[in-house]
Amino acid sequence: MTNLCWILTLILFLYLILINSQAVLASIYTYPESSTQIMYRSQQSLRDLSDRAWPAILFKRIKSGKLERLHLRLVGDICKKI
Image (tube, rainbow, N blue to C red; front, side):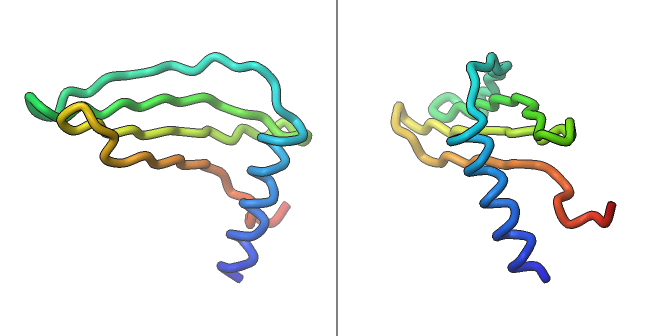
């Protein structure tokens, strides 16, 4: 069941990005973690055809001027029974 949720989430994500894309503005927050490391967080809420919200959050960590990590989190409950 878990694999099915991942597959459905990936399909929905690709649909939202490739088929249903539109220009959006996202909030960007900066979190200095040390003198050489900064974490950036950007968040935008996307809506599907059923008008359900899917928050998309991007985390970007810069260390000594170089990209250390980049994570994209798509939050939703696609496996919830309707």
